[in-house]
Length: 519
Image (cartoon, rainbow, N blue to C red; front, side):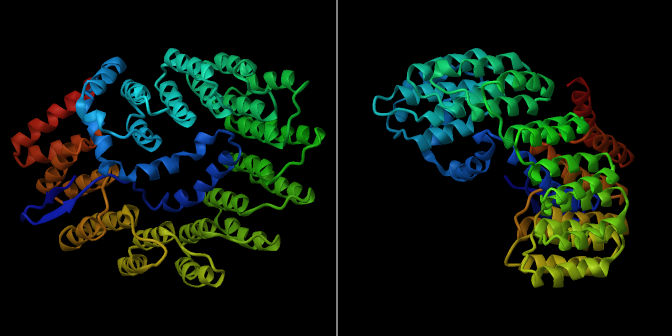
């Protein structure tokens, strides 16, 4: 969807939606803190955790799938699953659709938040005599029903799958996860207890699935009690203990996590870099760097060399604590153990140098060190540099790196690349040609999108710049795109339009604010 944002001179800028933005305080953090999810994902035993990117990729072309759109057009909002089924069965145009697993997969993706339509469309596809849904599609429907807390429907589908003998450990993982997510951890445990009924084995893998599910839902104590019973006849492995290490850290009981490492050794399992790095992250979050360094020494004493994730985590939190000089010792320490930096480490290093006001060194990292070590920059690398120069009011340098990003063979600008420049405009009062050019580049040159934070920045900034007419036009477009503004944004704009005697605008804003209060 496209729309127009105009200033008081009626010059037009085409804008569209939505992308997340951030400021200088967290530009680099997005890069370095993405490391932390690596620790979690390495401890996850549920295949659905790894399917999301593939599903999103598969759905890029959904809008051009005419058969899927036919189904979507035949389903009325709010219909029951039985009504959806009947609607599709009675429509002749649906009879000509060739049903394949790929087609049903795309339909389920479109209805991932609408269990009635998902179930009805699935039953319609299932009714075709020449088609049998794959077990993976059943699993996806199980997940949709569980996510929407339709547990009876989910269990009914599970019984149907049991009758057809298509239940896998992946199915059980989804069921346990959804019960635990609905805070019914006892049902999650009961599902595990019934593995034999489904022809599945209670072994280390399935036990880890249960323990991981409970720990992710903060039920670490219950998971431990179950483990003490199960380990009498199911041997744990290193992953079992890593699950508990991650679980204890998640509930801020880092000492228990540390003692789990000792238990791990006692069981004949060797702690790995994930085991230690998870605990190091927790000590970092407490800014307990003495413990961090003690654990680093222990790792190396055990022959477990810290990796780039470990060092990036430590450097990020040292920077967050304001210990910039200490943070800048991390690259040397990392080099001393033979650990090579990667893009995300360099992004964090650039951010640290920026916070320490060492702009020339930060620039050198991008221009010299990364190419010398064969490490490619990404968009966040440039965004951090751009934000750094904007923060220090060096717009020409910021624009220089923006141009480098535009011509980079590795990456291209996103809205975060421009957000510091937009902030700079309002900070120094460049709210005419410079701001219009930036907006034009965002939308027309790079076809990027704005989100809630972007709109808030523009509306607040334009109001302060005495351009509330332009701010209100942006506000109108925001509403048309069904993005609900923050209450504070409404309040600021309302005061400005009242001062300019824009009565219709004031009435509209007041009406919206009343709805927000009663929502």
